[in-house]
Image 1 (spheres, rainbow, N blue to C red):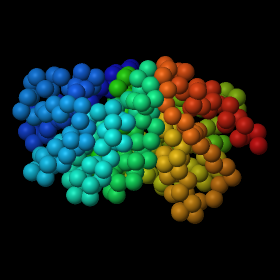
Image 2: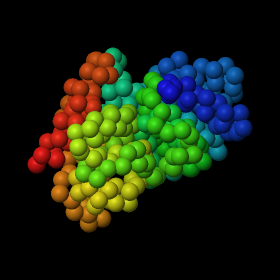
Image 3: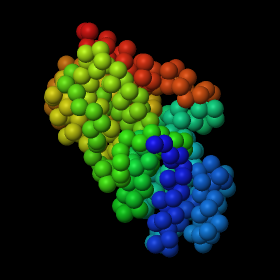
Image 4: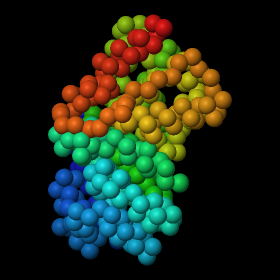
Length: 311
């Protein structure tokens, strides 16, 4: 089953808002792109249209949070992070306010909106805000669990996601615990640690590799901060080969934090490598083309792991 994640985002928020009038949704003139128009129409007292002024929107959200409201803000991932980073860092993080951020069109999911709209650095930016949580959505149930978690847990909560449909990986949001990774596939030779839309390519690649005699474990680390290093470490020790795959720049992303945590924990393995965007900006293209271009599609994963095993 596939469901547009923007619809899930709107539905879960609407359900929460009906039971808590303190929740306020803020939009930067993008309610049509993320299906919050119905919220604006049905719960107008809990909706603020801030216009194309993301920095100001974060300031408004911080002010609302300081008065006891629970703001949920949305814009494309590039605009809601790098465009208003100082406001997030100071008015949000430094001031210890509760602000929930939905960054849509994460990484190559921006497709034909192109390089100006393609956030390939948002994980790195948000990881640098002390005590912020960073969640990368891999299916509808992860998004539902992430929104519920953000509502219940004060602080800066950053959720990055595609707006479009993704195949289901799970059967219910109860399978997701924010802060803990999920095992998508067991394996003994190589462990793929991945997140977001890349989980689907990793799963397909692992199934193909199985037919070639290579046993690959796949872990969905939907929560990048805080990272479930215990799960990763257990598979690192088991398979001795770790490959991280991310819809993000390798600098500041999932791979770097996995490597740092493993080294800090004293875990030694035979091989570690990263697949992700390397010293490149975004560009216009459809999803399949972009994943292939940046080396994070199923084919690139299969080829890379076969090379790793051969060595």
